[in-house]
Length: 77
Image 1 (cartoon, rainbow, N blue to C red):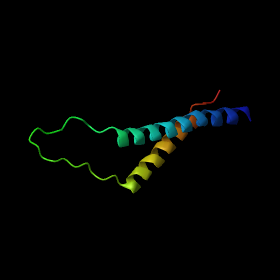
Image 2: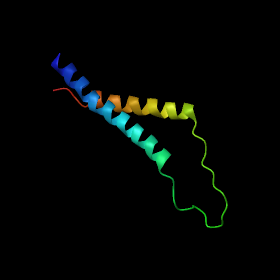
Image 3: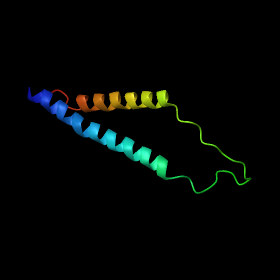
Image 4: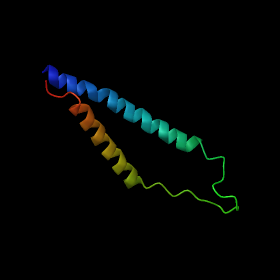
């Protein structure tokens, strides 16, 4: 029972860090734009659109990886 509690207690900080990191990244993307133009010839450079399915797939993959790391960090003693 204590081992299971130890494994699950490691998941809470990982989930919290993941949520805070995603919110911070979204805020930074929305607020900060590059002040330096990537090219000096004046051509307009448009940012590619964000694909929602790709974003959700990346979020799911990150969640699975972090959960596996948190649950596997307990080890056997």
